[in-house]
Amino acid sequence: MNKKYRVKLKHEEVVKIYKVLNAKETSKTVRRRCQVLLLLDENVGKAMGHDEISKRSQVSLKAIGETARSYSTKGLEYTLRRRVHAKPPVTPIVTGEIEARIVSLACSTPPEGYARWSIRLLTKRVIELEIVETIGRETVRRTLKKQNSSLI
Image (cartoon, rainbow, N blue to C red; front, top):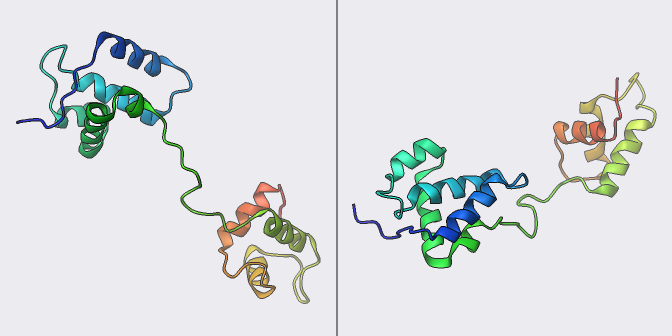
């Protein structure tokens, strides 16, 4: 098999990879990239195949290819960096103001005919009062749990 991207680590790079691997604060993703690079290294002999590396380090074949490509084209620093996103992939529905309104509603007296607030009743009322357009019961429950509020 003719590999498009070859990994030939220098001694200094191997030392740096082991430092990153042994660091306490290194994330699991970066650790796996380090393991993949060490297993792809052709300077220590014949490198393992991608299938064997995938089984050994529990990484997808695509991730192995991307790691090799990243190292070959952009270098070790780029490959081992932790990718931080500017904003979360899903924006939260409940903000501080909405959270405060839900908690204050839960602390108020329940509607006529009910002894206490239930999660379903509270969710229904939050939508009726147009605090949010739509919200799930689990989101309301987590909001109350976060505030150590209990409806029971």
